[in-house]
Image (cartoon, rainbow, N blue to C red; front, side):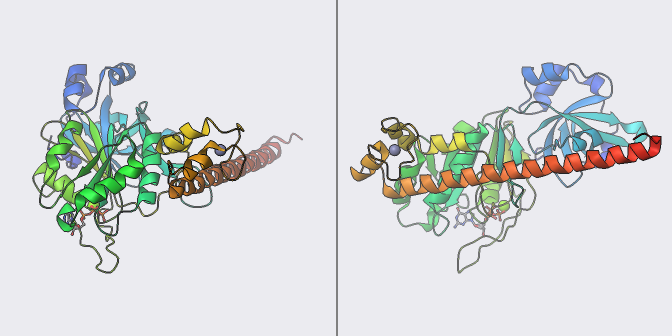
Length: 377
Ligand SMILES: Nc1nc2c(ncn2[C@@H]2O[C@H](COP(=O)(O)OP(=O)(O)OP(=O)(O)O)[C@@H](O)[C@H]2O)c(=O)[nH]1
Ligand SMILES: [Mg+2]
Ligand SMILES: [Zn+2]
């Protein structure tokens, strides 16, 4: 297997055979594979292979199986039930080289799952990646640094089940990085904030506690903050193309377009992501409570249980703002994001209802067809 999980030509992999792989082989060969996955996979015999999705294209997945990276389609059955394999998924592959076919037929239970609100008016969630242990939220000194945006990132990361770590990149460009770290800490709670420079490779040692064998770390953040540069620096070679940034607003050029997994020599897994344009919250209520834990804590002392912390008498949150314990902009941000969450969930509900309606419309058409066919009324 090559270290960076790039796809091998399918011709080389026709000799992969699950009978050659024992559970131990799988644990060694598929980073992150463990006893639980082994027991979930034990029901599959014969032509089935265990693997992990390295990258996902429209209809094709690149999958790491013991000894190779292969390309596979997605079974019709999975597509019909709307289950989509994403990068980081542990999957079951049906390998039938004699028929020239290799299909992802099942997705094994996800330990963690990073999602965001889906774009468009249908609402719902879009899964970005799965089975992540840690998520590096990457921001950079300069115009990218935005506390309100960091709160959004923290909400979706908390909701994923993975642990967030905030990286402040490009400290080589800042006069006073320590001041910026302090600024970030005002919204970070207990989340570690690590200043570094991916380009000049300073501060990277502080990342090693998160880069353990078999553990998976994804990098997310806006375009141009230096996610791919950091991947290259950690791997010690250029595996990802990096892009310049626009001078006027310091925004990136969306250089990375495909989500992809890379393997560090020690067996840790890194996932590079395309820059996120806009983070919608999706179903992140739980995450939001963690991001604003000081507001949630104060709210326990509000006079009314359903206090909205806007103008109610006896509101402990408003009192804490008055006393200077909670910054006003934190409460404003909390209100904004909570409203957005309610809006998103309403949108999702409407989307679901529409789907239901469409389903029933389809059933009505089917009944009509059936009646016509059988002559029954
Ligand atoms: N000065 C400085 N520049 C950096 C640093 N890290 C990255 N850059 C530069 O920032 C630009 C964008 O870097 P990328 O690594 O492509 O950013 P990205 O986050 O992967 O961007 P997308 O793939 O578009 O999401 C490049 O010109 C890098 O050389 C750093 O630590 N210091
Ligand atoms: Mg990139
Ligand atoms: Zn209140």
